[in-house]
Amino acid sequence: MSIETTTITSIADGGQVPPSAQMELRFKAPYDWARVLRFFSGRAIPGVEQVVDGVYRRIVDLNGDAGRLTVTKHPRRHCLIATVEGAAARHVDDAFARRVASMFDLGADPAAIGGGLARDPWFAPLVEAAPGLRVPGAWSGFELAVRAIVGQQVSVKAATTIVGRLVQRAGERVVHDDGMPAADGAPAWRFPTPDALAACDLEKIGMPGKRAAALTGMARAVAAGHVPLDPAQADLGTLRRAWLDLPGIGPWTVEYIAMRAWRDPDAWPASDLVLMQSIAARDPSLDRLASQKHRTEGWRPWRAYAALHLWNDVADRASGARGG
Image (cartoon, rainbow, N blue to C red; front, side, top):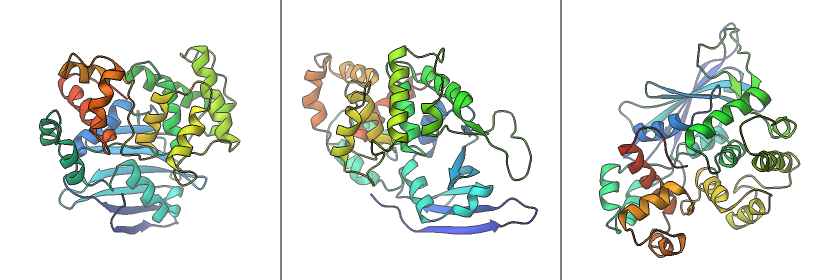
């Protein structure tokens, strides 16, 4: 998947006004902005991310400079508008465009994905209801890996709360160029670096000891460069093997990272409880991983999108984020 043409506009640079830059990133319609935002909103890291009034906001770090990223959908054209304010705006370039495009899955071809999944009668109505559904990504592979480990065997809400505590313990509060404090609830924290998290005391953070140890071990491995973080460093097979070798990291965690950070369109977190329940609700005879495998194999090469459609279907009928 690749992104289409981008447009960069420098709004201000230096002087008494903090620098800012704006970029338009195109996508293939349809694009289900409302459901993408709902997914991010339910998992927004307290202090780092925020979704309000159809806008996604977060603190970003580009080449050591902090900034405020705002992303919204253009009211008429098939593009998202990404604006960076603060020192980080000086580093807005093609690499930044690819990063935002990956995070919002702008390279997806909804017609191909929907057509492939709709061959299964379970998905035909789901695709019809949400034809522009995307797989929301992440600002960084490390951030997503932290979220995946913390999210092992707990609810989305619980995982979000714990990640917020990690930010408070190991993150860094941002001082903006304009010297103004962030509004209440607005993003104001850098996500912890691997080094900072590796050195953080996780006692009484709200996780079992083994999971906390797995998180610390992962952060140390990333900080030391012992594990690759994304497909630019290794192929998907190598990435999976390297991460499965880490203590406390199992198939669900790796597949969740693969679908959201590594952009593997066929990643499938098979043991996800909500996915298993959703499949069994459609066919009670498919109530075990082994029995579900044959059905899910038919969703290749778009199983990551199949997961999003099933999670989305549950979210449409329930209150609060569930799954992933």
